[in-house]
Length: 308
Image 1 (cartoon, rainbow, N blue to C red):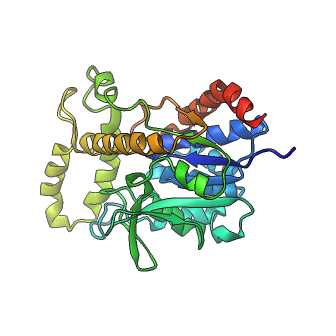
Image 2 (image 1 turned 135 degrees about the vertical axis):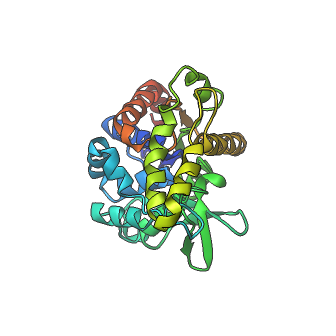
């Protein structure tokens, strides 16, 4: 008997996506090797590392990276449709060895992006893998769009946040999906009502805003600094600019995910509990990876039933 072809759909979720590393590691330890990997946004990045054989290197970097190193990947520009240009992220992927054409890898892989002009989802299944990942992670308002061919592409989470349908189209017979956003709505602000205004998600954008200010002419920086302070939370009950942006993205992806999965359900759904990790808290990789491992441990009985 031959086992069924296994598809792994890695969902979008920005910094919460480090949980995908823990998911894949635990699946492999259990003898479950995905044949087809499809990812949206951060899911595309981790999925690309897996098919390239560089997942361990990505995990080591993520667990050891300081916030200074993470900010170093944010090449801030005030033009181009986003705060972050993305070239530094591409260079980072190339340094890790995640740079070959997708069609050269043994495992089947697809990154999902969204056509900025039409809103249609785009499946990137050929060409340099780092370019496909760059397009898939282009979060609106944060990363500038990526141009591939004649299209401007943005984050895959806008059109297919958990790409179960892509796995099925590529021939997967049993599909494991990882939804990073299943427990976000209604919890984040409730959990932070008693927290100081300077903590939580506001800690990270301070660094990002500092990079923005360095791009301005010196004569503008004083006034711009005052405006920047207004973008931060003004009190424990008042969300700041980045809080609103992050939660709006969460709401959008939650609604799209529910709709897509209702019509394209996976065989096994993994729901790591990541509500306390904010959009850009990439320095909390160890926590996210551990939660990814934990959700696989809970789902192993169901996985065994499907895989025999």
